[in-house]
Image 1 (cartoon, helix red, strand yellow):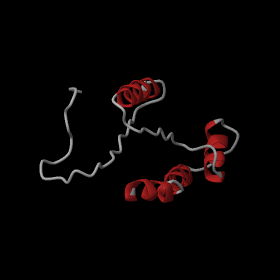
Image 2: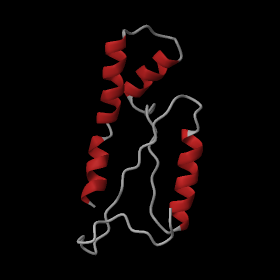
Image 3: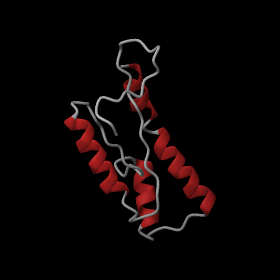
Image 4: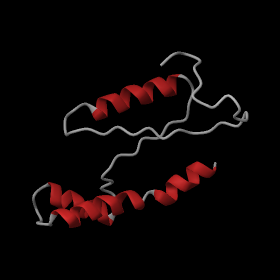
Length: 101
């Protein structure tokens, strides 16, 4: 990233607009390391930053996913897919609050 670069459209108002950055990858592929580096960089520029991790194991759906991932429950592929989706939907309310402010 270049210092002082702006990702906003040229005709955007002066009002700040947030960004959602998503890292996807296989287990142990460096997602956490890259997130940490990006957070440090953005905070160093004075930006307010929040890290969200999925699955979010603090919710009831997240706890079901965690149990599945630790091989302590058996679920078919369709069911676990729906649980991962539901886990992200649980965060939508918080996401909308950030989007409005």
